Structure formats: structure tokens, C-alpha cells
Length: 361
Ligand SMILES: NC(=O)c1ccc[n+]([C@@H]2O[C@H](COP(=O)([O-])OP(=O)(O)OC[C@H]3O[C@@H](n4cnc5c(N)ncnc54)[C@H](O)[C@@H]3O)[C@@H](O)[C@H]2O)c1
Image (cartoon, rainbow, N blue to C red; front, side, top):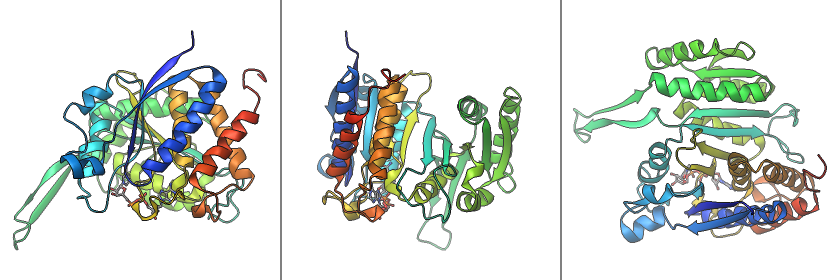
């Protein structure tokens, strides 16, 4: 009997309405090729839902998601809705409540795309950012008092736990073992001496269990410069929630466009479904025109299928993306003129011309 996966589909807002269906069309093509099926259910959650119903998702939304094998998500947020809500009421909520403590964000230069980094090639830009996804700077633990008075005061408290650092460290070291065996811990522990000092201390302890992985520490200011000047030094990066958030946009930029980056919010133990989404937001400035780059969303589909165990299908998607960019099928953000739907179709066409991975070994 063929395998069936239950996927919760959350387009979200803005370009999510265009790139998620584009990604689904690729998933369906590859599923047909490899003989598995997808049962999808669409949820119209996000800022648009908030405008109509006063909430980003229904109260039982998290419970509803628990019955799925994975969540395929676009992005949430609209200019007319308070922008403190999308993370609090949807993205962070799902990531935290479903213990998706790993944010897996690969950075890679595809064939045919010119990086803004002069002289850097596909061999130089190929690394993964592992961002801690449940705690750190983004726990939203704080207070504002008397904001409109001379006594105004605001506090945000970061949270770092031993369990939180140990689990992300093990994930990152194991991933490095499967790649080029190099892990860079990016922090700012020379100034955030308590929270990130403790992070480094635990990271160092865990590193002893992986003597085969070359472990080093780098401060985020140096790491930012190194992304631009010498990206080839990175293989796997492990970092905190906020540093990972910022560095992954820089990663998107050196790939050539923010629209290219895919990601997974992963619960490695599979106690809950994981959620797969591009690294960018809902891009309201270009929504509704069929010009958004769907590659980050399509790449997220590959990461999702890999997580579900459909390795060959995931590899096919990656080859399909590479073939598409290599032949110059590019959207406007990459100085091309292809539409969102044309890029998805081009990826599908490439996948269908590839031989089945298992047939060619
Ligand atoms: N995970 C999420 O749901 C998430 C993440 C980031 C931002 N947001 C929300 O998205 C909204 C817009 O935020 P922003 O403007 O800061 O960031 P953004 O990532 O949406 O857009 C930044 C710039 O990149 C461009 N861009 C992004 N994705 C693209 C794509 N696929 N193809 C071509 N160009 C693309 C946009 O046009 C824009 O110029 C806000 O409401 C924000 O809160 C949501």
C-alpha cells in the first residue's frame, strides 16, 4: 500500500497565497512520481483571519495541528494588522507549543544565480544555520511600564536553559557529522556574559562527545563579516534564536534573494508535527501579482519530505530547483521575468525529466 501523509496547509497572508499553492503543485508531482500520496487540509489562518475573526487561529488550532504529519506554511502578517501579533499569535506559538526547537535553515548558491558576493561560487556558499527556536531572546518575557511618561521603562528578558542548549547542540553536532564535520557556535558571549556565557559553557561540554567534529566559537559580529567575505569557512552553524533569525536573512541575501531560502521548524523526536516555511515574510509589497519567487517555499517542501523520510523525492526537488535556475528561469527579484507559477512548472518539468533516483542508484 502506498504511503499517505496528512499535511496541514497554512498559506497565511500576502504572497503565501501564491507560493504555497506553487509548492503544493511540486509536492504533488513528486508524490505521483514516487508513489506516495498527500492528504492536505487548508487552514485560512493568519492576519487576514484576524481581520475577520479577531484571532490568527482558532483556540483549538494547536490541537488541530497535532493530528497532522507535517505543517506546510507560507508566512503571516499584513500592513493593516499590528505587527507584534504574527509572531506571538501564530509563528512562535506553533514553534513553541509543538516543541519545534530546531530551526533548520540551509544556505546554498544554486547554479545560474549570481551571488552579490563577487567571485564566490556554488562551492563557496553551502552551509546550514541551526537556530535555537524555542527560547533565547525571543521568549517574549518582559514588561513596559509608563511608556508615555518620563519614567518609561521597558524590559525583555532572554531565557537560556541547559536542556535547551543541550538538545540544539546535539542536533547540530549530529548534522555536522553527516556533512563536512565542522561546527561553528555563533554567539555574543563576550558582552551577554551570563546568558550566552552559559550557552557557550554547555555547548563546549557537549562538544566533548563529538571529538570527530571540528568545533569552534565565533562572535556574531565576526560571523556577519565572514558571511560576506569568506562564507566557505562555514559548514554547520549553531546559534541562538535572534542571532539565527538575523543571520539567516543575510544567508538569503548572499544566495541572491531572500525569496530563495527554505527552512524547517523541527521537533526531532517527532512527538509533534514539524512546520516547513520559507525564511522570508509575507512580502505585502509584491503580493497578488504572481511575481514572488516560490523557490524558498519549494525548498521547504524538500526539507519537509526529507523529514518525512521521502529522501529521493526531496533530492529530486533540489535537482529540479537547480535545473530551473541553471537554465535561467528566474523571477523578478533575480532580474528575471518568470512568474511564480512558471517557476513551479519549470521545477516540475525538470523533476519529470529526471530518472527515478532509485533507478539510477
Ligand atoms: N514567518 C513569518 O510568517 C514571517 C517572517 C518574517 C516576516 N513576517 C511578516 O511579513 C510581513 C512583511 O515583513 P518584511 O517586509 O519585513 O519582510 P519580507 O520578508 O516579507 O519582505 C522583505 C523584502 O523581501 C522581498 N521578498 C520576500 N520574499 C520574497 C519572495 N519570495 N520573492 C521575491 N521577493 C521577496 C519583499 O518583497 C520585500 O521587499 C510583516 O508583517 C512581518 O511581520 C512574517
